[in-house]
Amino acid sequence: MAKKGLKRKQKTEVVKKEDEAKVILPLVRRSDEPVTKKAKWVNRERVLVFGTRGISFQHRHLMKDIIKMLPHAKSANKMERKENLFVVNEMCKMSHCNKCILFDGRLQRDLYMWFSNSPDGPSIKFNVESIFTSAELKLTGNCLKGSRPLLSFDNSFDAHPQYSLLREMFVQIFGVPDHHPKSQPFVDNVLNFSVLDNRIWFRNYQILDENGAIAEIGPRFVLQPIRIFKGSFCGETLWENPFYVTPAKTRRLLKDSKKDKYANNKIQRKAKKTKELLAPFRVKPENEIFRDGNVKEKAKHLISKNK
Amino acid sequence: MPIVMSSDVDSEEELLELYASGKLKPGLNIPVEEDKVFINNVNGIKEAIASFQSSLPWSERLDIVAEAAPLAPELSMEITEQQQFLKAGKIDEVALNDFKRETMFHRQAQSAVMRGIELLRKHNIPTHRPEDYFAEMFKSDEHMQKVRHALLQRKTALEQTEKVRRIRQEKKLAKEKQVAAIQEKHKQKRELNENIKKFRKGLRNDLDFLETDSGKKNKKKDDGGDKKKNLTRSQHKRKGKDTKYGFGGKKRGMKGNTTESTFGGSGKSNMKGKNKGRIAKKKRMSSKH
Picture: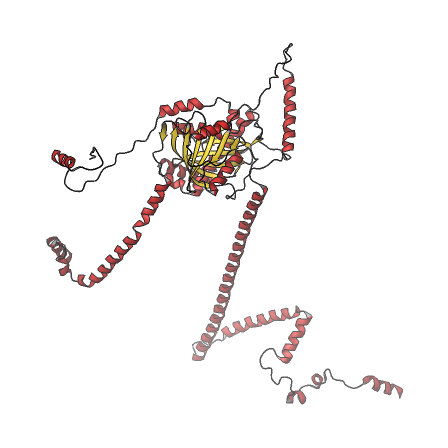
């Protein structure tokens, strides 16, 4: 199958070469001068995608999906939690990557994602919520592996500076370079980023036809930005999300809301019982006057009632 | 009012001092946490964007800022409602409702595609994959098979439930019809009885009701006669046997002889099926003489 793709590419190149042949070459050329190639693959972006120990199976599957989507991605071994995150810059340098996506898992429960521009920043930390990998979603869409996606952004990516920074980062990371050897020459899917509820929702759609018919492919996930740092995994904080609540805190709040259920129930039952017990004594309104004060007002009320 | 302490531990002297100056009042004092200031360095962000922004042409980036695509007019009312929710800050209404949220994303992607296709054509980037171009897909064939199977299963399940519901409905209707028919029969009988009573008491002089009824019955019988002609041979035979031997009722002593069968009735019926002697021989003998 790959061979077929290659053949096609060669054909197109032949056509292009004919066009190039019209360019007039210099009359004299030194024999040891290296031939200048016209590089088509200009955008030499490479993304290192890897995780730390502590990511769950689902997070790993999501990582695999992203690696599959990005032909310019490189994977690496899981990182030990003990290591300083600053080491990631070294790793990127070693594997010739200038962008990095780090899946930082905690206790196989919470997932944080780092998007970083490797040697000199900026970097962004996200909390990832409601993850659905493409395998667990039964969606009908499908696209070529490694085809170049359109990147669709919401209006609010232009409105706020922090989001426009995120947009630039997403474009550079998720945009597949033109003429990348592992990429396909057709554009047949859209990556949709939209901002809702202070979060960024990621969706992947297949382009069915040119009139705007689309079918979802997956995966789905929601990124909640936490902080933007000036450097890569270091530096001063440029922006902080005021709406961010840590997953541990949300869990605690959820638990706290259920805390008093039993006690409240007990109190209510007791109150009901005493009310029932006292009911026979509350038959006579005359007796009711002397209960807990305000005798005069109650008497007035009674008289007005009798009238 | 927040009171700034020199240390976390409240020393007696400090408290006394505060009390003397009137900052501390008797009663329960709750420490007030300072509001956290969230960093938002807009200039810094802009600088950061400028520092790493790529200068590549659009054909390398393929990014589009898109607003949600317009929908069919019958659905547009729902959408305006959605936008109203968003404008009113009721984000949860959209964010927590799966359908509303997904349609929003879907429409955004749609408009992005419609604009993107134009731009791609301008840049001579192919969007349509030829039929004979095969390559590895994002999702495996195995997975797509699973998806197809799941879809089919859902469809069949739906059909099954639909069928069961239809049958149940039909049964219900049939029962209603039956009950209605029985009630009609009872009503007719009641009316007839009432009329007879009235006639007996002398409240009624004519017996028209009987005639109409009998007329109806005769008509019914005629219908039966018509039906008789249409009977198949076996059905005809069965009917004959039923009239002869009876249908249902007492089975005992049916086959035994009765006085009528032995003595009464026409000879023809009695002689039916019995050997009447060799006629041919008599004929033969007579012809000899």
